[in-house]
Length: 279
Ligand SMILES: NC(=O)c1ccc[n+]([C@@H]2O[C@H](COP(=O)([O-])OP(=O)(O)OC[C@H]3O[C@@H](n4cnc5c(N)ncnc54)[C@H](OP(=O)(O)O)[C@@H]3O)[C@@H](O)[C@H]2O)c1
Image 1: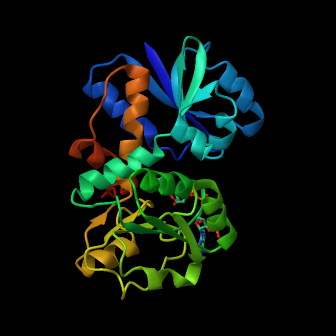
Image 2: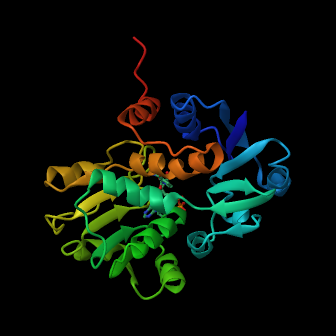
């Protein structure tokens, strides 16, 4: 039996077991995918014993992504640029690290907005936290001319420019509405709009008619940002797609089958996000 897991601290919120459990069943694979709470002080010991515990690899979530980057033997170029690992797999007894957040983001956009062109266009990204790093890098890798980054703490947007170069243009948080007229994509990577958090409340009056709008927040499935943009007639892409698509490569690396993001899988996760009330 092939085993994989997701590690984090805390980890009880992770929906990854639903996703991988669905694919294991769909492909008739004798395997398991579990949540493993790992506190920071036991991370190194857990990772060095991963193979001995019988795991083919693991997903890594908050707060361990950067620490695990420093614990793997090797990482690919994109992951080196990000300095953060979300997927670990074992080859010849060595821990290898990769990061699938960027491809999850891009593949979700390809599914939800197939006409969107990122090459030679400008994107506006709200937020410069952990998830933003992968999103900004992925957009740059698609050949964007400019990624305008608005963050409450401007210094973190400046750090993205220092990391990725002059195509990243940091701006003040409250200037974001001025930049919405000529961008192909608007992305929210802040936690604003998430259940239990304040609303994002950005003024969309200058949003280009053909700008695609996406939010990586997926609880609720359709944030206020997406509702408001859709009401203006813009194409919108939900954040849940990123979560589903980032899981594909890990499954393939551990279990040897490249799975598909199906409507049935999406429904399973949606039911977990919005449980049907008991009557
Ligand atoms: N769909 C997916 O697969 C996926 C993947 C990863 C993350 N996410 C979601 O993405 C969101 C961000 O995650 P993260 O890991 O990047 O978090 P993070 O590192 O803590 O970053 C949070 C970001 O939100 C901004 N922010 C928080 N409160 C704010 C406020 N009151 N006003 C303005 N900006 C505020 C922060 O700005 P400052 O820098 O100024 O603090 C920062 O840019 C979370 O909701 C997470 O669930 C989704």
